[in-house]
Every structure is written in structure tokens, then in C-alpha cells.
Length: 196
Image 1 (cartoon, rainbow, N blue to C red):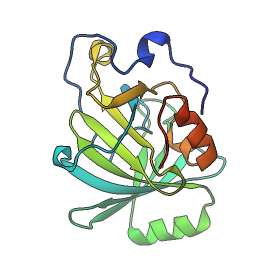
Image 2 (image 1 turned 60 degrees about the vertical axis):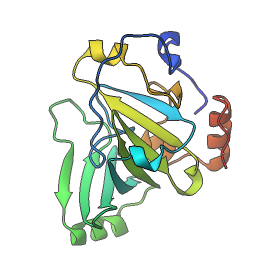
Image 3 (image 1 turned 90 degrees about the vertical axis):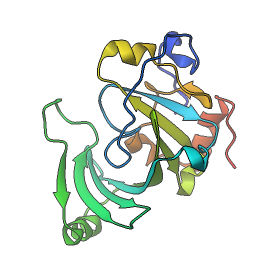
Image 4 (image 1 turned 30 degrees about the vertical axis):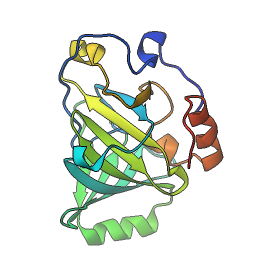
């Protein structure tokens, strides 16, 4: 974190482009840690409740020494949970990315597989999917939009409230799971965002 590798044209969250309608990431399946065609943004604050169309609490365990992620997703409206073993970055676009698990299988793997955890609430705020982080990352709010083609991706204009674009920076789930609060504080300070 703190190493900004994106090109200058994509750094500003408000670069002038003609707007196109992106696809909001599904609150349970995609978001700021997924691989694929999308753009990621840092937000200064959590979106207003009236703009949220869906909410899920996601806990990921990033398995040490692998690209594997053990995921629990809870719908906040119903309490319904789902469990999956996924790859944070599939080896190739056509590779299956995940395996659905029972609650018992999830519990056994959780007990057996070491690795850091990352917990956040994922909000559907069209046209974005927004992650509001907990624990050591409390105060971090990331958003992502997905696109069907490169033209829409390149010309997307982020909504108000986007502080900076982080698409090519180190704000992936696996990296964030291993980031302590002081490193996060220093990284966000570079964008003028202070942690609570």
C-alpha cells in the first residue's frame, strides 16, 4: 500500500469522460477483490442508507501460501448464509473460480486452514458495489463497478464521493487481509482520507 502504480489518466476519480452505465457487482459474488474487467475506487465515507439496495456481511480467510479464499456470506435482511472455497485470482478466465460448501464443510476447513481474515459489509449501491471494512481496516470504504467492454470501462465517470481510483493499487482482498492499521492509515493519508 502506498505504491501507486496506476497511470495518471486513471488516478483521478473525476476525470472527464462521457458517462456509460456499468454493471454493479453483485453484493455477494463480486467486488473490490475480484479479478476481471472493473474499476476500483476509494470513497471518503459510507454511502447514505437510502442509496443501498442490498447488504451482505462477508468474511474471507485467505489461506496461507495459496490463492485460495474460504468465504462466508450472510444476507443481512434474512440471515441466510452461503459458504464457498474460491480462488482470489483464477489461473485463467475460464477456470472455475469457486466450490460451494455446506456449513459443516466450511467449519472444518476454517478450523484446518491457517490464514488472515478480512471482514466487511458489501452494499449494493448502483452502479457500484461498496465494501465497508471492519476490524483493523475500520474506516476503509472501497467501491467497484464492472463493465462488459473496455470502452465502457475507460469512459465511466465515478459518482460523487469517489476520492481516488485504486484499480491498479494494492487494495486487493488478499493484500488488505495482511495490512495492519498503521499501514492503512499511512496509505489513506496519501489520498487525504483519515481513519476514525
